[in-house]
Amino acid sequence: MPLAVSTLPNVDFRVRVRDESIGGDNPFTWKTFTSEDYFKGKKVVLFSLPGAFTPTCSTYQLPGFEKNAEEFKKLGIDEIYCLSVNDSFVMNKWAQSQDLKAVKVIPDGSLAFTNAMDMNVQKDNHAFGQRSWRYAVVADDMKIVQTFIEPGKCDNGSVDDDPYGASSPENILKYLKGEEFDKGA
Image 1: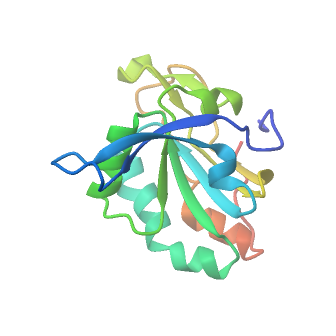
Image 2: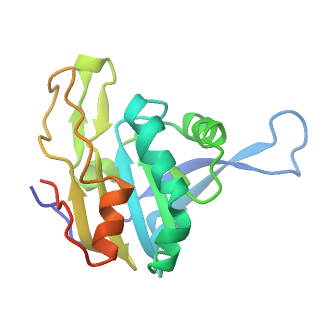
């Protein structure tokens, strides 16, 4: 199942960012970033997953990208981004709880990016509502170079339906090294 797009869609993301001029216990303000702010002029790995704080995402996928960040840089990747259909408060707290230094998180709470990528799925069977299917891309200056889409994309799959392998950091590193890799769906 190839993506419906060949370039990363340009959408707006509303993000809470630290602003020391505010002071107090909550020195954050809202800022709008575009896809171009994140991806234009860079070679990036963007991976998207069903939700912050979920088991596979928190135990394997996000920590794996963080642990391998230097290896990705050596192979020409400028930035690694994790996108999820969660709000900025959740994504910021998740990044803090994972002690992220290299991977940057992007909240897609309104599904603008996820819908434009045609990767939206219903996960009512998990009481999640609308979420992103698990996938990753390597993109260069917004152009999608390679996709890694987990197989079985569907709405309300089985309770145990959360495939993970094609979009793993280990698999994407194989691709970047020119080794045999799993292209996924």
